[in-house]
Length: 277
Ligand code: HPA
Image (cartoon, rainbow, N blue to C red):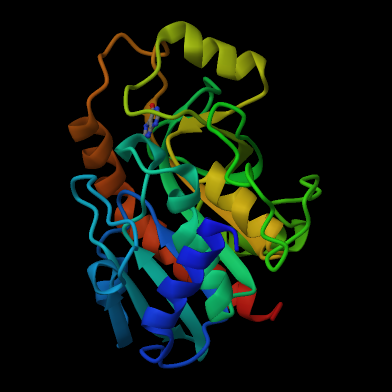
C-alpha cells in the first residue's frame, strides 16, 4: 500500500471513534482566526498530538486541534492550526490533515490564510476571494504512487475553487457589507518572505497574493473530489510594494486586527454553503 495512504488510514482509525458526527464542511483557520472556535459551542475536539503519526505544527501561534461544532445545524470540523511545508514535513504530511477531513466526510473545504499582496491595489486589511492558484513552487502532494482510493492519477485542476462556492462567498460578503477583492493565490515554500523581484515575478505570473500555505491543501482536496473555497486576508503589502521590511510579528498583528471581521465573514460563508449541501 502507498505509505502515505497507510499513514492516513492509521490516523483516521485513531480518531474515528472520537468523531461526534461526520462533518460536512471543513475549515482551515489561518493567522488571525485563532480565536474562531472560541465563539462556538464545541461538540468535540481532537488534539493533533492524540493522533499518532499526525504532523504537529511547530509554527508559533498555531494551536493544534480539530474542533467539531455546528453552525446553523451544519456539522463542521475546524482545523485550528495547520502544518506548513517550511516546517520540514514531507508534502504528503502537510496535506494529511486535509485528506483526513475528507475521510471524515467533508464535502466542502474552506481554506483561509493571511497573505502578502502582489496586486498593488490590494491593501492590508482587505479580504481576497481566491479564484485560482499557482502551486508550482512547492512539490505536488500527488507525486509518488497514486492513491487510487482518493482520486485519479492525473486529476483535472481547471475548477479547484468552485464557482458556486465563490458566489456564496460574494453573497456572504455582500450581506455583511464587507468589501471583497478577488484573485489568484500563489504559494511559495517560505519560511523566508520574498524578495522584491520574487513578488514582481509572482505578479507577472498572474498572482494577486502570495503566501506559504493553502495551494497544496486545495490541490490535495480537489484530487479527492472535495469542493474547495478560499479566502485570504491581506496582512501586508508584498515585499517591494513598500519600503518597510517584513516581519512575522507585523503580519500576525495585522491578521489579528482583521480577525473579528474575518470571523464574521467565515460564519456567514458557512451559512451560505449550507444552502448548497
Ligand atoms: N509572503 C508570504 N507569505 C505571507 C506573507 C507574505 O508577504 N504575508 C503573510 N503570509
